[in-house]
Amino acid sequence: MAEIHELPDILANQIAAGEVIERPASVVKELVENAIDAHAGQIDVLIEEAGVQSIRVIDNGDGIASDQVAKAFLRHATSKISNRHDLFRVHSLGFRGEALPSIASVADVTLETAIAGASEGTLIHFRGGELIEQTGTSARQGTDITVRDIFFNTPARLKYLKSQTTELSKIVDVLNRLSFSHPKVAFRLSHNGREVLRTTGNGNLQQVIAAVYGINQAREMVAITGQDNDFKVTGLMSLPELTRANRSYISILINGRYIKNYPLANALIKGYGTRLMVGRFPIAVLSIEMDPLLVDVNVHPQKHEVRLSKEHQLTTLIEQIVRDRFAKTNLIPNAYANY
Ligand code: ADP
Ligand code: MG
Image (cartoon, rainbow, N blue to C red; front, side):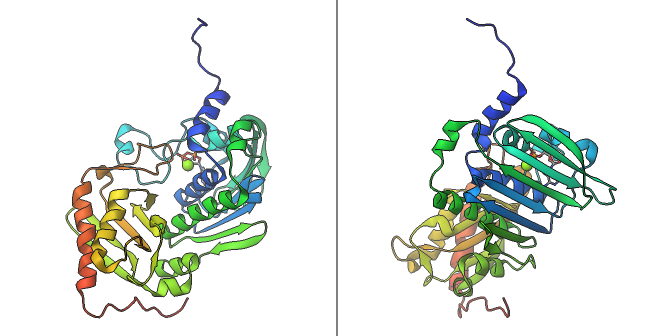
């Protein structure tokens, strides 16, 4: 047998990229989450050829100080947690410090960034994990990152990608859910120069839903809210007349993070009782706030799945809130003035 040796960083990053970066939509998710974590109020996402050619994310967030920029591309390097205690109280979307090094190892990445008050910004360019250059650039506060030629050096990954239509729809889905969880952020998504999504960032969830699913759909939704000792649930759900043929129009957000959780979505559906026709599902956005100690987000590299400590209690609460909402007389859609 060969001797045991540590893998070079580039190779280790490519292996990690296999878990974190499945497709262009995963890049979009990681980059936009970074922008949100950096307190951006405006995030522009510009996609060319379904992200296979390029993905550009521009934010007006905190930026990265010049002496920190190269560190952001080191494996397991993060500004978001520092000890075990933090790991169980994660408030940011990111914390694993894997996205940038992973993306840079399987693509061509140029990042320009500046912090408030800096006299100069920093430009850094990586290709296939190799540092190509680092120089000064404009001092515009925020970060502007472009990812080109995804998977150029991992042909098997590139081949595995689906049609542009499918890859684009996955990107749109990522942006939709992120706009639901962050109605105070103004998002813009364009594909090949054509605008696909725009939200205003005024904090009104119903207007975000209108931007994503359409004004008529948003008008057919009602607000729900309720809480117990551990959980606070708020959101909007469709009237039973407005349904879809699958569950993908149900968005569950836990502490501002979109997650996939069958039992929680099911609790919502059960709350409708017999009001839903068989095989029909509501449109809903449920935002759940809880002590971070009750949710483990560190079970899945892409953090789509989480482990909940009191899941049964939460499903009972959700079902109850939905049922109570229907019990109220005069179920009038949440009318609101202007889009
Ligand atoms: P993580 O988000 O898990 O910390 P990343 O690899 O995604 O890891 O990013 C590494 C670090 O780079 C972040 O912790 C953050 O300090 C910095 N960073 C990345 N993107 C941005 C951004 N858009 N604005 C400001 N800082 C950023
Ligand atoms: Mg990140």
